[in-house]
Image 1 (cartoon, rainbow, N blue to C red):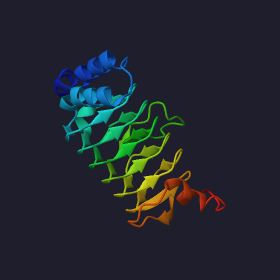
Image 2 (image 1 turned 30 degrees about the vertical axis):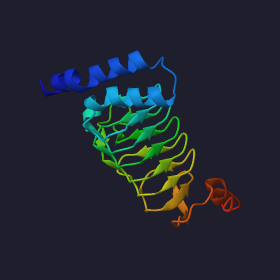
Image 3 (image 1 turned 180 degrees about the vertical axis):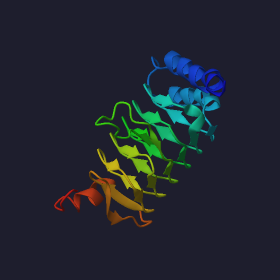
Image 4 (image 1 turned 90 degrees about the horizontal axis):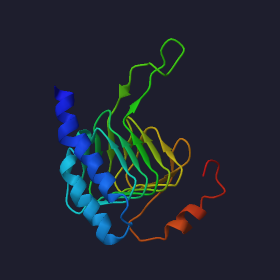
Length: 192
């Protein structure tokens, strides 16, 4: 009964809204409209949510988004456990946020029971394109995760993290710095 209620209250209406709005272009008006229409079907959602096209949410009742969150084209949220995103977080295109993993049983991952673990994305964080965040991970406030990185554990506040698995390469200070120059400074390091 609980699963049926979740399907009717959160899952199906959300998928219907996304189906109806995915043909609209990704500009300011439609990013806001999509966010406004989707927000009632999430576990919690702050104001000014902006969503790109072709985003997938599984178990939206376990997804909690803060104020002024932006999610770009093609992101995928799989909430086997709670996914909490604080205010002002940015997700680049094609990010994958998965709060459960498969387990290995009888020589196969196919029928192993899921292993859920929560995910927490801190305030003001920016996840670049194609970033993967796995269950049990925490991305600190103000942290920049470089494109293509895989976050498998906790990242501190205010750092630049890159690589597979993601690791901090530099602390961010409060002075504005162009991101490209911060990353270029560490281009010669291994796993950068």
